[in-house]
Length: 244
Image 1 (cartoon, rainbow, N blue to C red):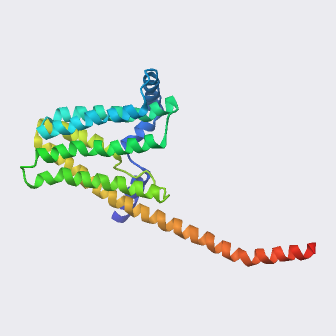
Image 2 (cartoon, one colour; image 1 turned 120 degrees about the vertical axis):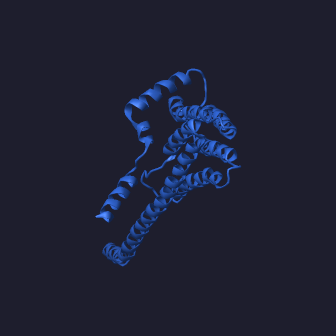
Image 3 (spheres, rainbow, N blue to C red; image 1 turned 45 degrees about the vertical axis):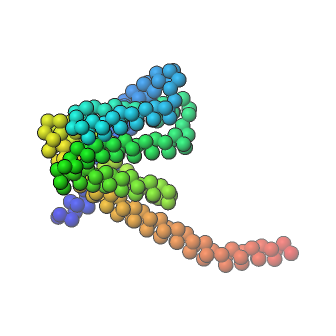
């Protein structure tokens, strides 16, 4: 019974459970497209918008280090607003490029790190609790790395869970709770660390299954090609004999 429940849960998670799915809904996409159209008329470029998201993200980290966790949450949300608009702006202006995608991914990693580094500094005199933001950052990067490496290996993973949008929402909530009671921020960050570590392990599990299935498929295709070789040669020589 428990095993069946766990299997159903993992299957649901593999299909993808994420707040990012809201961003794919038609009303939300249409709203972003209208805002991007307005931005396009100002001459703002997608890469500039991507770089602009760095400013509030770094400011969020500084605010977190100073203990201004409410401001840190607000600045992180501002950074996220820039981040979700650079893609629609690129499509609206027809300027989507590979470098733009690389720049966006690079800036995302800095944005992910800044608030958590700030929290690490804030709690640096508290002993072991200061480790939690660092563990959350490490686990989050592991999730991103597994997905990126699979893309490099041309292995298509399902959506999975604890994607970047999920982590950012949980981090904003943790910062907001921390503005009420600092210890609550650590509880939230600890939850992010735990869920991200589990998501990374699950991503590796799924990646192994996908890679094994792809290897088996490629091997079977190769075996069929080898088996067809002699028959093809016989057919070719018979055909050639008929012409002679």
